Image (cartoon, rainbow, N blue to C red; front, side, top):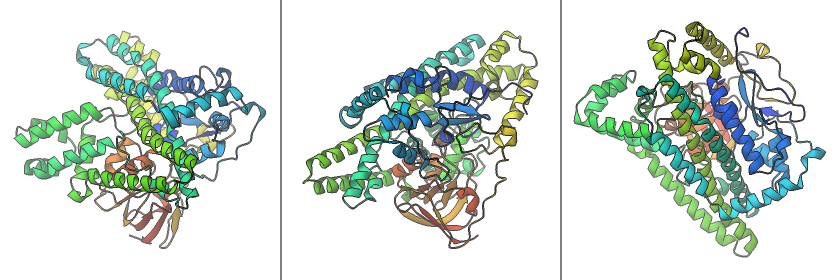
Length: 580
C-alpha cells in the first residue's frame, strides 16, 4: 500500500525521542486524511502548538523544528504526541516535573520510560516565564482571550454565506482562510490545557495532606460550563420531546436510517417543533461528531442521522437519568467539600490560600480547556462544509462517489481538481480510500523512543487478542469519577454503532471524544481502554455524575460483551461478576 502519494512521516529526532499515541489518540483516533493533515494540522494546529510553547511557555525557538515541530507528528500514517519537549517544559516549571506530566498523559502506563535529565533541559529563562504564567493560572485567571475567541468562532458560523452560491475557487479560498485562525485557536487550546493541569494537582496534594485523598475527584466534578458535555444535555432535551409525542415516537420506531428526511417531510405540529429544536442544535453543535478534528469525517451537520441515532438511544431512559439533575448533585457535593476542607485548613493560612486558589483555577481552566477545543472544532467545521461542497459538485460531475472524497486529496491536488487539470480524480481517491482503510486496520505502537518499524510490519488491529476475563477477575485502571455501579457490560467500538446499550448498562469503549458523550447518559458507568486525568471520558463523566475508570488496558477485549461487571470509580477497579 505504498505505491501512492501519502502524508510524509516526520523525521525522527534522537534529541527528542519520546513519542506516544496517548492524548493525541483522542484528537485523531484514526489515521488523518491527506487534506486534514496538509491543510488543517500541518500549517494550522501543529504550528499553533509551537507558537504556544515559544510565546507563552518559554521554550526557545531553536528547541523545536520551525516547520515540523516535535510536539505533534506523523509516523506510519498515525498522529503522535512528542513528549520529550513537554517533559523538559515540566522540569523547568516551578512546582512541576516530568513525573507530574507523565501522570497527566500516561496514567501509569507500564511502557513509559523514566525521565532522564540532560544538561540542555535546564533553562532559567523558561523558568522565569513559567513563574509569571503560574501567577496567571493561580491568580489573575483572566479568560478575556478565550471569550474573544469564542465570539469570533461563533461569528464564523453565524456569518456563513450560502455555500451553494460560491464558486469552487471561492469555496477553497474560504476553507484556506480559516487556517491562520485555527493556528491561533490551537495556541490558546494548548495554553488552556496546560493551565487545566495545575489546579487539580494542588487540590490532590492538599486533600492527601488532610487525610482525605478521595475528595479531590469530587472537588473537580460538577463544575458546569463544560462544552464537551453540553451536547448531552441538549440531546437529552430532544429525547424528551420524542418521549412526549406519539407521532415522533412512531417515526423513531421506524429506525434512524433516513430519519432526518422523514421528519422533515412531516407537517405534524410536534414534528415541526422538533425539527426546529434539531436545527438549533445543529447550529450550536453541528461541527461536532466522530473523529471531529478530521475534515474527512462527517460532522453532525453533515449527517444529522448521527444525532438522531444518539437521541434514539436516550429516549429509552427514564426521567430519573436526567443529566441536569446529576450535574446539580455533583455541584452541590463539590461546594460542600470545598467549604469543609477550607475550614479544616483555617490554622494554615498559606495552605488554605493555595487550596482556595486551586479551586478557583480548576473551575476556570477545566471548562476553559474544553471551550478552547470547541472553538477550534467550530472553525474546522466551517472548513469541512466548504470542502464538502466542492466534493458534492465533483460527485455531480462523476469525478467522485462521496462528498467527503475531496479530503483524500492534498492542497495542490484540490487546486488542480478545481481548474480541471487533475488526472483521473475518481481512480485517485478510490486508491487513497483503500490505503486509508488499510491504515485503519493496523495497530500502531503506543510508545516509542527510537525510529518505529515501517507500518508494513505493524500487527493488524485486534490480532493481539488479550485473555478474556473470568468471573472474579479485577481489572485496574485510573479512577476517573467517584461512585460505583453494577450492570451489564456493553462493548462499543464506535459511537455511531452503540449496539443495544440501554439504561443501566455499563459502556466499555476504546476511547471517547465528544461524539461519545451522549452514550454516557443512559449508562450506569463508563470504562475506557486508555485515558489520563484530563481525558475526555473523565471530564464528561464528572459533569454527568457517572462512575468512570480509564486506562483499563485492553478492557474492550478482556471484558466479554454482556458480562455483569462492577465499576468502582473511587478505586479504579472493574470486577467481573458474571459472564453472559
